[in-house]
Amino acid sequence: MTDTFLTRAGYEKLLKDLEPLKKQKIQLSQDIAEAREKGDLKENAEYHSAKEKLGEVMSRIAKIQDKLQNAKIIDEIKIPRGQVSIGCKVTVEDSNGDQMTYILVGEDESDPSEGRISVFSPLAQGLLGKKEGDTVEVSLPVGPRTFKIISAQPAI
Image (cartoon, rainbow, N blue to C red):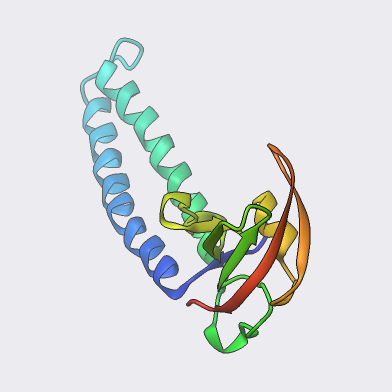
C-alpha cells in the first residue's frame, strides 16, 4: 500500500471509524456461532448472512488499519509558505479572472464541495511544487486550462 496523507483530524476520524467496526465484528462472530448451533448450515440463511457481513466488516477493518499503518500526518511546520504542497490552501486565478481557493489534502479527506481536493486530482497535480506568482497550464478532463497561483499558505 502506498502512503496515505492525512491531517491529524483525518487520522483521528479513521481511528474513531474503526471502533464500531471492531464491535460489529465481535457481534457477527457471535451471530455465526449461534447460527451454527441451529444445525444444517446449507439452508441456514442467518449463518450465511452473518458470514457475508463479517467478511465485509473485516475487509473494511483491514483497509482502515492499512491506511492508519501507512499514514503520513500532514504537519503545518513542514508545509512551505508560498509553494503549493499537500496541506496548503491555494488560491488560483483562471484566464477569465475568476479566483478559486482549494485546500490540498490526501485522498481520504477530499471533498470538492468544501474546497478540499485530493493531491492526486489533475488540478492538484498540475499545481504541486509551483510557487506564488507562477502561471501554469494544467491538463484537466475538460481540456487544458491556465491558472495563475495567487497564494499558497499552510491550511492545516
